[in-house]
Length: 583
Image 1 (tube, rainbow, N blue to C red):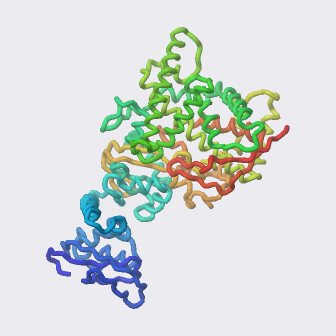
Image 2: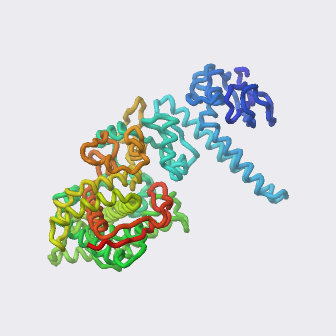
Image 3: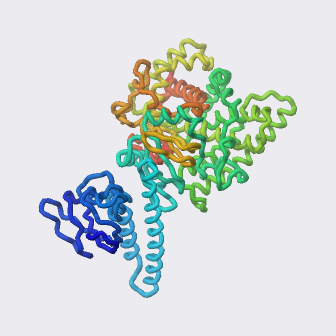
């Protein structure tokens, strides 16, 4: 090819294992060179602005190598267009998708005048869409000079959101291998993101929370958790998302002591109602009900079963919509979640009004809603903060209890070790005596089992931040205003940190084992570590104590699938066969 600007034809061979020259053959299948497998040629017509060098990215891709597509053409430092096209994604997925869409459309429309006109319009629309995409990718490639982390932008508007939602674990693993195990860039919902990976990444982020980062919620989450007045195109301020400082004190272990017995009592009543006399129970629906019942008592001070059941129904819709694509269109999960938040706000407004009346009359109450009223918070602030607390204190704990039941139900040896530990605690108490603070500290093996369940199936994938300054990490620069995402999946399933990561092994968390720092971070770290971690531990361990003492169980379907990407759930609700223990 010459170096003057003109149109040229490049032929690419998917899966070829040898380097080939660009053929000037249009629309033909060419025979492979000797020693390489026969593959179908794709012909791409592109403008050439520079001579195409032997060591460019296309040659590397055709030879089966990965690396510097779009950057290192030997003939031109900026890279020729052929190199750039290959750099859009591995194996020219951008144009492969275009080709497959065209083929699908052509087979859909029958051969008549009206349908062909519609087909032509569809093609025109696709050409415009892919042209926008091409230049979006081209602009993205120009950012290389800014020393940005490696990565890509995905499709126009949606970015790589679909790939991430379909399978977050695979998305992260593939891009860590393709780009960098430390940091890479992507695009979610039109926002520029970097994902910081590994234990070193966790350490950097948690150690620099106040210096480089501020809290951030996706706009879709803001619509669910905050009122319409607060939701603007610019999103919420950091102050709008902060929890009141006094809340951290309320959630400290020493402040939670007085609630342990109450949690124990509620769990005993719930097990009696939903487990006793039943041969089979679905664990996930039960765990949602019991955790929200406790949360309503602790956060709102309400115990009315009908009122709680109404909230359970609405919060189920919110948590489901929270982890789906944010399409506010009738019939979608996100649409139902938006509607449910309206019902929840109305119910919470009624509760707040009742609590204000109780405070005014001097009636003694012990719940977080009342504490917020005493602190002088507005109804709107209380409603928003309580909604966030209830979602966090309900969905994550319910998920943990569910998968604890799954893993223990599959391992009788683990069950008997937990039972032995819990019976020892019971021996030191009177027959009807409720749990206390000291009892929680004795449940070391039980907590190790819970931690391993969390490691295997994290209830929360990670969290979002926004860069409030330019910062550098792993040799790359991230500009101010970019979004940052950290995730537990880059460490908790990593064999570098956890031997046999797919094996359920609670001994990893027993004293003396010693986990590498920043590898197990289900509650985050640094100044923004989850303030409700001790509350969650108390609820889960109180449940473990009671359920193990009174029942043993096994899976109805040992091969039940785990579905859901952002929040994994058992496909059938985890039905178990119950067997009462008579003591």
